[in-house]
Image (cartoon, rainbow, N blue to C red):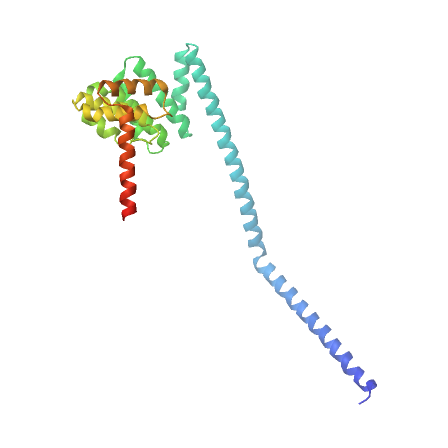
Length: 252
């Protein structure tokens, strides 16, 4: 077969490939047209809904931030009024903040109001408000713990010492953020029970906490010394116990 005779087969093969591509493109275009006809409006609706949701989230976030900024300004202004002696105006603003959506400012407003009630001699009302904050699970735990300490402190002389110890047990532990205040109240409760041997070590531990206020540490060191507990001895016992634990774990 001559080269001249083979050329038409090559040309026919090329035209077949071109035809197949055209058919494939036509099928794809038809499928796309069919898809768009059937699902196009739903797809547009979904995209529109997504854009609306995103826009709504932005608006909500901005409104929430604006509300938080307003509550912050209101709280600062209330504190300024208290310092300026404008207690009536300040307490009115605190009453508004006590109903705020932002839990942090809501908690702070109630704690300040409870403090003011205590200063006014209305101890029962102050204790009730502290208890309300401490029991409010919608508030940050830090504020709830502070409210519990303030509540126990306010009614320290009117409740059994064991109740003080039981309430503050989770907080009166070295390493806890509230160990200083809770530990001191716990130690004082042990003193009321005549358990000096339990109160002394707690005072000594407080005295050794370098991150606590110096006034609290100094007071605790004096109490520990008065009870015959040396803070150096407490450290020595703690180190000895730690080494004993390490030795036991290595032995295992």
